[in-house]
Length: 386
Ligand SMILES: Cc1cc2nc3c(=O)[nH]c(=O)nc-3n(C[C@H](O)[C@H](O)[C@H](O)COP(=O)(O)OP(=O)(O)OC[C@H]3O[C@@H](n4cnc5c(N)ncnc54)[C@H](O)[C@@H]3O)c2cc1C
Figure (cartoon, protein in one colour):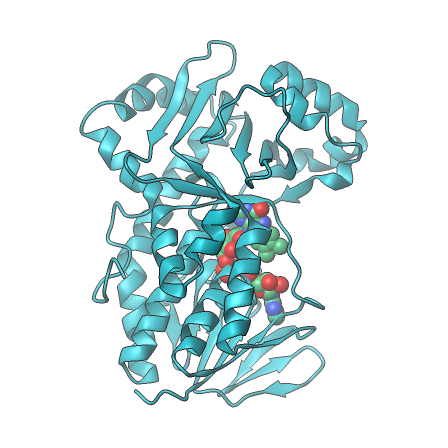
């Protein structure tokens, strides 16, 4: 394939930057459009799973993110009151990297710029027009040999019809309290059935933490209208070790309200346009795969474009990712209600059937691979590991 394709990418997020960096490194001319005024680090913590780290190695940013994040060896969740283990998944010989979204973003952005990507800010793309993109202000951008929608869960270009989930979460980054005795190599969670969930994820090496508090969408306004101290008290009563983390807030505005949707595109490309990341498949973050799926999509599409003419490459990309995406979306759909739902039966099954099974052979090693992101081969028909 000729090495001077013009590639237009909508969305300067995790997937768009990873793909842009990869293609620009191969000599293609890449423009990445985003609606933001300037690239800005936003969001809270996320976990880069072992599969995501493989992609970051290919991009040459693994060292930068490893220097910033905190390695976690396992994920553990206990039931409120009884303290009984309800989740216990180890990474085995590997590890997940808990990192602030901003640090991952910054590492990818600097690699994309270094490789020669052009970032075009303040440009909200509203439609595809043949080989071009149309922006909100009426501008036309292109033509491009390949167009990519990496504009996330709220994509205006993707035909994806996603379903809003009834539960979301409050998210925030805080300093790791010096007095906390929680281990800094573990993602810790506490559940109250499936209707309450609090979590603490180690963050940056500084050290930082990302905290989350599960909340029904219908309760968001109530939470905001009540004094913050009421929630801080309730959260601390629920999980006393949470107290020094939540006591750091002085305003509701320091917490981000996250809403989740679930949906999967059947066809990840059509004609000259490919859909990657949340624009192609979105899910609750319960399995911790969002950024990793975007990285895997970027790797698969970038590799396919390096081996085939554009139209075929887009098809190869879709085939390469189909089974992995389908499997993880199914698992997310099945597992999310065990942790976030109105059900009383599902958390009972989680605590009394699934949790004991999860520590026993052959389920324990399978769960390790589910968490790592490679219980199914992440890409088919293309080199993996990269
Ligand atoms: C602001 C933000 C904060 C997040 N915080 C967290 C977090 O704390 N923890 C976590 O686990 N996950 C978080 N996520 C989700 C996680 O990052 C995604 O699952 C993952 O990054 C998927 O990557 P993506 O490339 O598909 O989309 P994203 O990383 O979501 O990037 C999409 C990009 O497209 C841009 N965009 C959207 N629409 C348009 C348009 N019409 N025209 C131009 N540009 C457009 C957006 O501004 C954004 O920069 C966050 C996502 C965002 C956007």
